[in-house]
Amino acid sequence: MADWDRILPEFEGHLECAEGLSKNTLIAYLGDCRAFVKFMLDKYPESHDSIQVSTREARAFLIFLKRHGLKQVSIGRKLDSLKRFGDYLIETGRWKSNPFRELPYPRKEHYRAEYLSPEEALGLLSFEFKDDFSGARDRAMLELFYGSGIRLSELVEIDLKDIRFSERIIRIFGKGGKYRVVPLGKKAAEILGIYLEKRKVKIISENIAAEAGAAVFLNVRGRRITPRSVARIVKSYLLKSSEQQRLSTHSLRHSFATHLLEAGANLRAVQQMLGHSSLKTTQKYAHTTTGRLISIYKRAHPRWEKK
Image 1: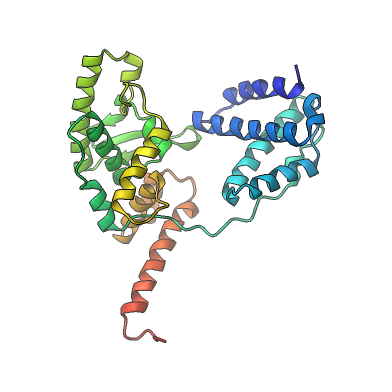
Image 2: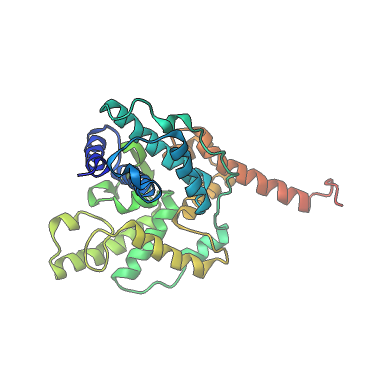
């Protein structure tokens, strides 16, 4: 067996034992490492039975990613994964040095959050959904995305035990294996309750297994819905409610934060609801809001010099 074929499963076992790694983070790390190994085997076939990698080859992989259209932030994330992979190879005696540690992170691109206007958001949630299981589920997912600001990966992992209607909160398992509590608005609670009734009927009528029944959001076959399916469903509704083409599930998270800040919400409170470890991450939404306010001021205030 070639060394690469043996090391990847070993590294997977190492990651599974590491503390604080969520399932999605583990999958991302492994995917990044597999992509690099495939690149090495395609570009440098002589490395099939040797796992030694030079700084030149490591840099060539990042250039390859750039040429294939990956954004700087995505390349930076893959570099994080490969630095960890290289550290593991040093710990196990395969490498003497980690070539990925010698590479700088790509310069960050200017961040622009895509988000809905308040009118577009209300239009999205006022859509005429089908009066069946799928329609109720889709409406409940949209309400939670916009009403609680949760991530796609977090929504699909919600179990029944995480919802507390009496306290109007949901316990979320977020990045870094950390739990946080997010609010469940009155309207969102009402719509989620309607969906759960239809979900209960589906579980009973189709005799769905208990382990699948723990998940809040199910697909039409009664299994926990996948992130890819949710992304596709939400995208279809977003295209009907806005002319913006680059909107996604994350745009609803952006909308949640931006609209709260525009209404005067405390930045640190928004940080806690979003689950950001750093206030700096949350401030990008404040920058978006500030830009919009300045734009309005320029257009409307008589003291602004108009050219």
